[in-house]
Image (tube, rainbow, N blue to C red; front, side):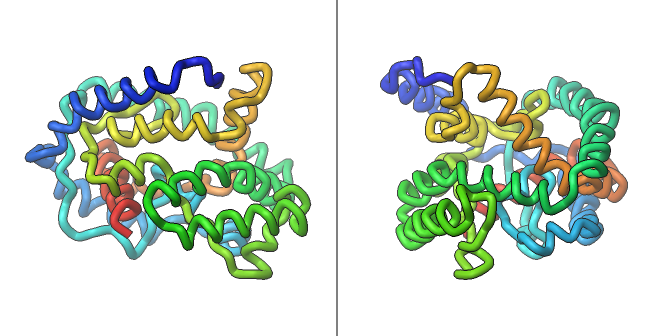
Length: 279
């Protein structure tokens, strides 16, 4: 990722996208079957596998992404988000599903078998420390100055005592938790609606707002400025892949517990993001 696009152009694109698509978030109806799918998805939260000791040793909310829903925080009332691209979204969902079971999961299982948990945890700590600017900027944009101060303190402690972030003494010694803030949450806190639901190849579940947030965060993500471009892509992929090795089984649990996996994943993701915005 290169910062070659003028900042003014980037801002204009964001504002135009939000202006065009935010109306979908106002008065949109829950897609047919959403209530049943939501009910079906709920048991999956209690079935998430916890056999990996690293999940207990480093219980950071940062690493819960589209399939890492918090167990006790799902709101009861459904979130109203339109899904006008549902036919296309379902096709991409199926492609992502096959990609996970045919490629990503087998490779991640082999990686997990070969690389000890302690080493994978060290890599995860390092990337968490590198991504401090993303969390810090969004804490400031949301007015969460205490959390911003914690992020600065964590970065200093982990970069020094933790040896460039490979360790996490900020959490282990000083009980400083990760803030887990991103631009999608920031836009939500500013009152900007989801827009409509969209499934991206490989990336998975998102909305117009969350997509703008995802790509916007790349501008303050240090990994995106690595040279050459292939290095940035490779490091970013490895970060996600290493994280996946800690979460093998979560997606399967959702599919097995859901009457209709697409709707379950969609509604679970929307409600999870709503919870993050409102906390």
